Amino acid sequence: MIRNLFLEHKRLIITVVVMKIAFAVILVATYPFVPFSEFDYAFNGYHYSGARDILSRSLAAYDGQWYLHIAQNGYQNFPTDTLQKQSYAFFPLYPILIALFAPLFDGSFLFAALTITFVCAVIGALLLYRVALLDLPKKESRRAVWYFLLFPAAIFFTATYTEALFFALSLASIHSARLARFGPAGLWAYCAALTRPQGILLLFPLAIEWWQQYGSTQRREKAIKKLPLVVSPLFGFATYYMYVYLSTGNPFAYVQYNSDGWGRHIGSPIDAIMLMWERFGQFFSIPFHSFHYSQLDLMIILVFLVMLIPIARRFRISYAAYAILLIAFPLMSGSTMSMTRYVAVSFPHLLLLGVFSTRWRAAHVALTALSLSLALILGIRFVHWYWAG
Image 1 (cartoon, rainbow, N blue to C red):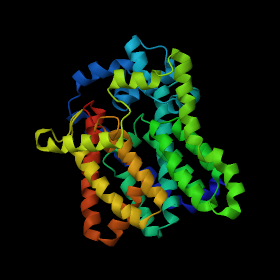
Image 2 (cartoon, rainbow, N blue to C red; image 1 turned 90 degrees about the vertical axis):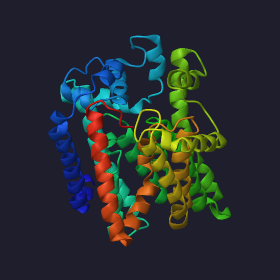
Image 3 (cartoon, rainbow, N blue to C red; image 1 turned 135 degrees about the vertical axis):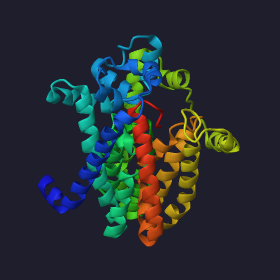
């Protein structure tokens, strides 16, 4: 089966691999020409004791340090109680996989993490193409993959982050649901909900697809039997929530630690709207790209919000619902930080870019140049420990 899949999409897979390698080569080639941010590294780099060489420092920056430390030492073995509480914001599937595969790399947690990210990015690109083919011709589907590879947040699909794993799992779930295979769809969604908190959002596209396919009176009995599979993202989130509770003895630990340690809370859509109103009112007084406040993040949010209208018109309602929630979910936590990274996993937006760029060649050239430039800038910043998202 794997061999047939490779032969069927050989050209696409080779293109993805070559582009990922080329991106990494560019980062390596430019590394000596940009000074390393010793301040940011000193402030954030102590979370993973194994980060001693250039590679482990540069491709495991910021959140990557946390995942490697959790993979090696668990959640309970941080140097201070404050750091231990903060660690619970990072979901467990990626660190678990790193720990499982590390022995294959002579005990290197870094190489295990980078390999998982690379493989998942390739699988994610392939799944994006297969999902796109359900609604789009081949050229537009290939363009969607093109913009996935060149997205401004591309570095996070290369480094020790969960974006690549989550992207692959979420697309595997959506693709299975579209084919009415709710067993695999539920399994992949459960795993996605153990990878990132956004995994719980898969409940909505799965529920919509389930209702559209089994909502008729004649098929209601079959629909009820598949309901536990549809709500599997809730089970995934609940699994980790219970783990945190059992580890800390505090039933509200996950929510409390996110609020105390990272300043993120559970808000409402009204909170998200008020936050956006406030941030756009400050637009010209904030830097183009910085840690907490960023014009780039705000512009990405605005563009992605505008794109929701044609997504709703052109694609399935399940896609539109998922795209809206991927934008709203982090905004409801009270921050616009890292939004460029958070929305990078929104495959409906990539599908629309595939359609849009195929119809207007000038737009394709301009978007490619802009996306590639931002991807390289943020990638170079990231490997030198300057904030990238």
